[in-house]
Length: 357
Image (cartoon, rainbow, N blue to C red):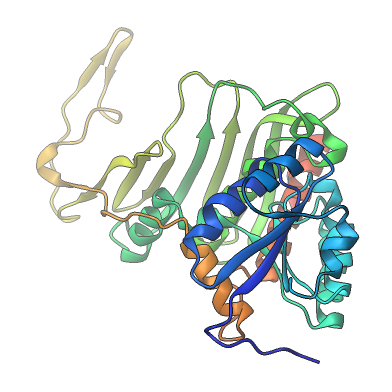
């Protein structure tokens, strides 16, 4: 029988996988959420179980014990990626609503099966796409919505660092390791929310570790509109590119780093023409690539928008209470997974993949 919760009832949650992200959910994110309470956790690592007890949470002796607890109606799955499908299925069949850490699954086929099980069991299945609330993304979303850049023809979304991939399963391909599934899933999720229309082609290059997991990649999406979007992730880049660079026929916007320093530059009047100066490089003159006359453009700071990390959980609580749908639609998740599969195929074959989705 379907249980309808009132606003006064606390939603009792369990976490399976109390590593880095599981710990973050339990000790930080849920603390920001009004109406959600973490009852207990399960992890195969005894040290993580001891840590859970120290934090005052129940430490279940097994996954099955946690899923059998009638108090728990919501389960967060924060294990290595290859364990997600089996745990999510077991949780939904035990009557629990489920949120998966990203990526939801390694393959699109695995996630399609989970969607079918969610429909069969009547449970909520959603994915933790928390970077929909990052300030840099929200700023670019507003800039694009404002239309000041004119017809946008190029979007670059880059995350670069120089520390390499952290040790552990994130370096193991069969467990869903690699930057495409780690950071690419976030950046693609953001891009596909702000760029309308179908993707026509997918082309990807990678630098991989010996087992085939990618530590750097450059992924180009060509949309049917002609717009090109580039997602670039690197773990050995000592000079990062801008976090975002968006170009249109009337201007451009740039966001640098997580502190969101940047600007929006737009033309003042497309009917007024100023002859550009000639710039002399060491090998000769150029007028085409000379700096634009400052009298022809307006330069303004980026919109002041600050993301709220706890906002994701507030939207989720509303969905768990039956007041709204989850903010992350499973069709959106599935599309991103299919783009990533096409990207992998492109790298392996060395050619662009026709996509039409």
